[in-house]
Each structure stands twice: as structure tokens, then as C-alpha cells.
Image 1 (cartoon, rainbow, N blue to C red):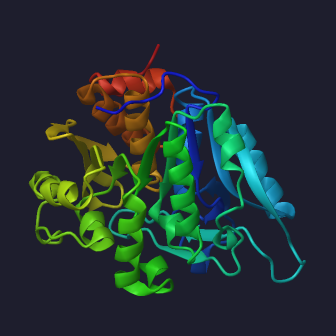
Image 2 (cartoon, rainbow, N blue to C red):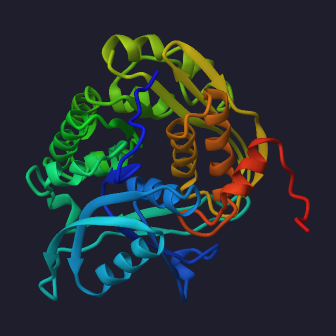
Image 3 (spheres, helix red, strand yellow):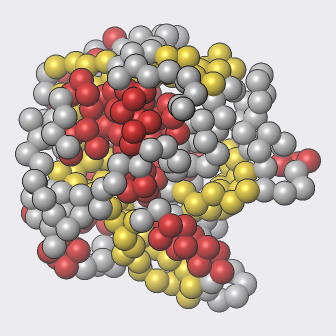
Length: 357
């Protein structure tokens, strides 16, 4: 089982890009007159969720640009209780460098959400080995270090920084985790599928806990498996059937976990989660979700699952906590949590939507 440090100044530290997401709600962008602004980033979301909902001490290492959008993002990071470690950049007033923008409407019913990006001259893509003083950061004690495939896809230097951080984390005794989060659009401009697989395999050689479904494992790591388009999205057999290949190629990996989601419409999903821990398999219940905003649900799962492991819960409890928190997160606007620990614990134990009086 994982040898998680019992204590540290930080329970959890993530490395990744901070972004702002413009959300016009159910209105398509071509007809939108206004947008909400959500602060996000796959890696940051996990730190924010662990801090705000699960009351853990967390941090994020990222790029920050000194201009108003950077100020907005930094304020939201503070509001979520996450300790920042920033490599700062100056904006030239015209071209950047910039904090990336994600555009994502919510869709509705039979109309799917639409997501696209503006990551031109992104500050986070310029991050490279040597930009963070890992010795000082890990010096106070960090129990768990996390990064992901979205950040690794941004440039040639970002995966090298992830590997540098992973090595520093391992040297300091921290657990390491990585969310494959395979995004074909991002890898298309970063060298294509072959580059993605070679890069992600190198990163994953330093990982204890891997998050990703069978599609992530196939496309991100080049592992063979069933046709993910043909199989039921709620059937875990394709996922569990790939674990022998994971162990063969990545013997360092001790835990693999993912969500299972069957989409009936934009707002109606069936939801479950599974994990493999050193040869044993575990599955959360399946529930029907009425989805308000699906963005961030996977990061919500990861946060709850990691919380369970960090808190010494059993694998059965950990997978249910991840499943419950991910489900609850999809009922809120935005990418990060508004749930309470009490709500997560109650839902994980079979709670209902009855009014709390």
C-alpha cells in the first residue's frame, strides 16, 4: 500500500496551469451577451477542492502574470485557501504573456457542451526546469505531489518540469500522482499522438497513483485494450483488463483510478467510479446524476479519492468519497467545489436529496 507521510506543512501540492474559463451558461457563445468567469486548471482544481471542502493544507505551483486577469485569478486562488508558489511574468500590454482562456458553454438536453481554448503566448507554457525552488518548497514537508496531462501538453518544457517536480517529491518522501487527462486538441499542436505517448510514459515512470480511464490509457500511454467507443461506459471490465499492461510497462504505479460515466443527455448521466490498488479492484455504486455543469467532475472525484487515501480510509471508503464528491461538484456552477465535507460523507454513505432541516 502507499507509504504516505503522516504529516507535513502541506498535505497536497499540485503543479499546473491556472486558467480562467468564460461560461455563458446554456447560451451558445455566438449568441451570448455575458459570461461568468471561473478560475480553473485541472491540477489546481484538485488542490482547491481538497482545501475548501476537505479542509486540507494545499498549495499550487504555477505561472502568474502581473496584469488584471492575473490579479483576478490570484484572488480566487486565495479565496479557495490554496497557498501559491508562483513564477511571475510581466505582461507587455499587447501580446502577453497571458493567462490562458477557456471558453465553455454548458449545453442543455440534447445539445452538448462546447469547449475551445485561447492559449496563445501562455505563461504556463513557458515554465521550465529550474523555475521553482523544490528544495525549499518540499523542505517543510509535503505529503502528496500532483500534476497532469493537460499541463504536460502545453510545451516541450512543461513535462520536463513535471518530471523534475516528481523527482524532488520522491526524494522528499512524498506520494506522487498524475491525471492523464488526455486532450487530443492540445497534443495536436504539441507533436501529435506519438509525442504524447512517449512524453506521458516518461512522466508516469515517476508516478505512484495514476488517474485515467481506458481511453486515457490507450491514447495517452499507447496501451492496448477494448474499443472504448463500442463498450458500455459503465462496464469496468475494459479498465480492469488493462491493469496487467499498466503493471508491465509501469511497475512503479501502485494505484489506478477513474470515473465511469454514461451520458444520456447533457444534463442526465449515470455515474460511477473504480480503482485498482496493487492487484485488487474496487467499484463505487452507480447513481443517476442531474448535471448542472459537468466541467471539473473528474477533478472532484480525484480530490475525494485522494482525501480518502491521505486520511487512511479503506479503499472502499476512498473510492466512494471520490465518487460522491465528483457527483456533488457537477451540481454547482464552475470548476471547483461548493460542497461541504458533511455533504460528501453523507452522500458516500447513501444519503439522499431530502431537504436538510
